[in-house]
Amino acid sequence: MARVGNPFVGIRRLAKSPIVQFAVFLLLVTTIVGMVFVQRSFLVEAETSYAELTFVGENVWNFPAATVCNPKEPDVTAGRTGDEICNPVLFEPPEEAWGEVTVNWSCGARVAVQSDVDGDLVVTVLGLATQAERPEGCDVSDADPPEADARGPFGEDGEFAPADAHGIVRDSIIVVRDRDWRATGALPFQAAATVGEDIGPGAVHFLQSGRWEARQTSPVHDYVPFAHAVTEMVKKGELSLGAEVQVWDYRKGRPATMWGHITPTPDDFDNSLAGFDLVMLSSPGKTELRLAHFGFREPATIRPDWVDTAVNSPLFLAMFALLSLIAVILQIMKDTGELRRKTKTGAPPE
Image 1: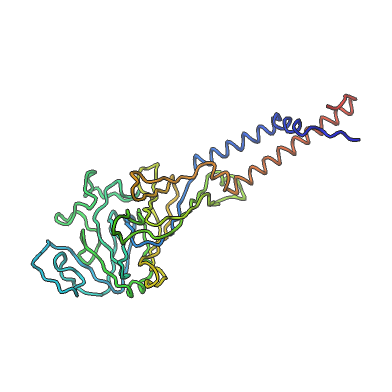
Image 2: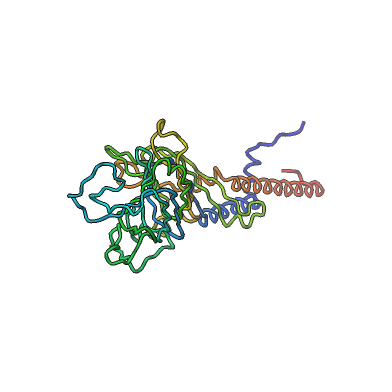
């Protein structure tokens, strides 16, 4: 009767094999290289009634029917009937009500986009973002002292204009009625983005729901023919009500550039909260997701690690299985060859 060997002895012999050890070493090196040089993007999909954008590159928004309200020195004597689009106490009379508005946003301009409780879209110009608030690729040196206020030093001295038309300056607002907003279509953007607002008592503009995905690729893929230019989803999660979301480039110490769009929510406002849909994807880099919640001093940071890659990466699992199989086959071939040699010389098998 054939003798059945101890399986633990076989495993121990495999573990001591130089071939198996080299395969494990190669796998570890590949994993470390893949983690160190990984390029990661975050996909964020959210339904929200508030977002802040700091533009970089070309950003042109067209509203077929909107009203631009430009600020003035507060005039407490100005009467208000309640029918005005622009509050006469704070804003100049609009040049044209519900006319076509096309805005080419300046690099570095910072705006807040919000949906009012009645469904109207309101874009508020916050000014010029500081250097720390901008993504890479937008440096406005003439109006950017490091200690500048986030609202921006412009207007009186004419150093910076947030847009190229309609006399838009800091504190200007663009109002789009509900029915016109639904007919406007998508508002694409290239910008640093913060989705949602710190929720507090009486808050009406906040993130309502959403999800995120961490996608990454590595230079290792370039050396694996069947995995060239592969982007893998290594982690995902849901966004909770009232969260504030931002994607951060921790290597550069500044917000990541996001490519995305804002669209009217398809839901009926009578059956849901007023808001809009926002989808954005960060440029590949050393990025992390930051989630701020009411009461937190510091945002929670989400950054996939090697465990997430090992568990969720099909390429990693495939390489592990392939290297393990090759190592076992080579070890079996080596043991078979040794057994044949011992059989020919008459030496007793181990």
